[in-house]
Length: 328
Picture 1 (cartoon, helix red, strand yellow):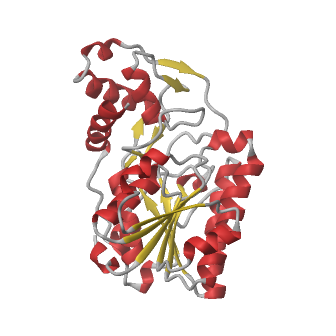
Picture 2 (tube, one colour; picture 1 turned 90 degrees about the vertical axis):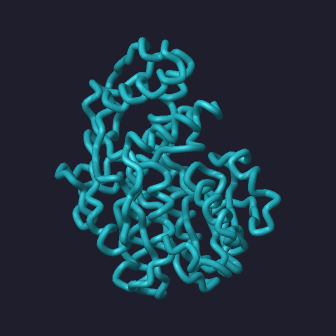
């Protein structure tokens, strides 16, 4: 990663106290890069940024992307933006589409306006694999999408449309990163909308049966956090104009079924507690809005950003489980 190109620059990470955002802040600060964190702590955790508070290169702004004033305050002095702030989760968006739209669309637009007005050099944002919607072909290629299957998916697609308009109309350079099922350290296992990997890990550690929606055949391109960090840094530092003002899949490029995932987790956790190997996996009905299969082509990212993901699902799970075992 050409992270040294960011020396003497300032990077704003929105949602910087969240799972992905805090990992990005940690990477930037470990390379002595001035980092601004904007978060309203609706889903982000103060404990995620506690290690950074006394770092002279770290500046926390407690604010909400739904406030244009907060956005402009955070953008003031920033050279680059890594926009991670959003309300995730397909089920959450189905239960409360208005708030999801308010944060993910109106908040996103506020950030674009603030970035434009403060002359930010580049706006890198978290897009989503949910944008592929009902398009059935695998692997997913950036130029071909289907109809969205949830309010959340609609909001993330609207983000891409707005980013494109802000480049063509205001000459703001943007890069969208379509995340595929990111997992790793600091991902919260608690709450109604917890992601599957930390939720399963916590259940198994507690000797509870993980519950799979459906028969376990649904598959995902699970992507370890360090691969995501690599893509954010490469998108922010890319010098080839062809690599900008477009979207990329951020994934490993292999898919794992949910039953395979649960089996791997049981095997790895059994190294810490042998009784976990005997825990039964349970099943219930599929969730509304879930797509059956997800698999990314990462050819575009390899070609234009020299993306070379280091962690496959098994290596990533090893790292994640080591972290969870110590921290849960």
